[in-house]
Image (cartoon, rainbow, N blue to C red; front, side):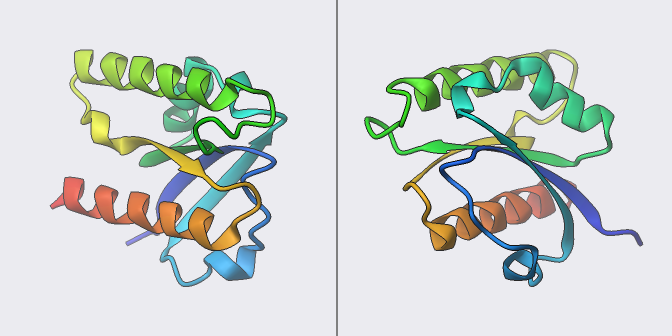
Length: 125
């Protein structure tokens, strides 16, 4: 069985995790950084599934602490839009998650990736 593939779309302020820090998660983890999570579009989320991701995590700054003021709130709205589209075409919307992560808190970021992994495991069983 091949490893599960997860895609993380994140603001560059929310992630400084090194690949070895994610090594205990038994999945292929593709991280794509954006200048702000508010720049992540619905199409970016859906494209991850085209690239064989089984789950997508969008990580933005904590509410009210976004470097660009409202970027993480815009990202959350786009996550909801992507979840609605997935639901309409028969996919489980839980495979897309939004996380509000303290800026440059590697531990919190890694925990959110682990949570996504667990959610995907539950959706497969």
